[in-house]
Image 1 (cartoon, one colour):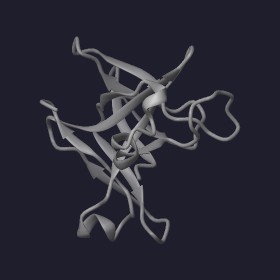
Image 2 (cartoon, helix red, strand yellow; image 1 turned 90 degrees about the vertical axis):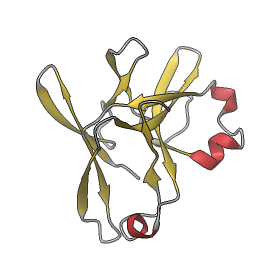
Image 3 (cartoon, helix red, strand yellow; image 1 turned 45 degrees about the vertical axis):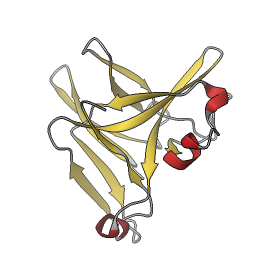
Image 4 (tube, one colour; image 1 turned 30 degrees about the vertical axis):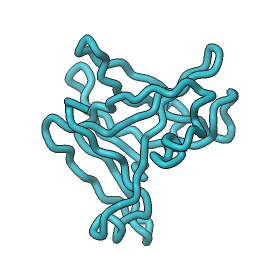
Length: 139
């Protein structure tokens, strides 16, 4: 489900994990710059956006996120982390020119990024029952 990411900002490589309430994800903007935006919402955080850090592609397509004015974004990372069924962490490097698809959701002054997840293929399913949606630069 993508519980952590690795990316470089200003020549500093960071590992960010969802449980951290200050977790931010690097979003590729249309002008080519990267902006850091808040990753989801935790139980102890104020706000009106959904709890969690993930959005199922099926729920987006069925309109469940529509009231939050969703916009697809590209999360520009070098690697992501998944925990397997035994709770062991595994890091997966991103291929050049690929991104994790994110969902930008907003309500009033609040805005957050959610990692879009899909059903994994057979190999990925051995690690986790949800997988981040990987997209190319032309998506």
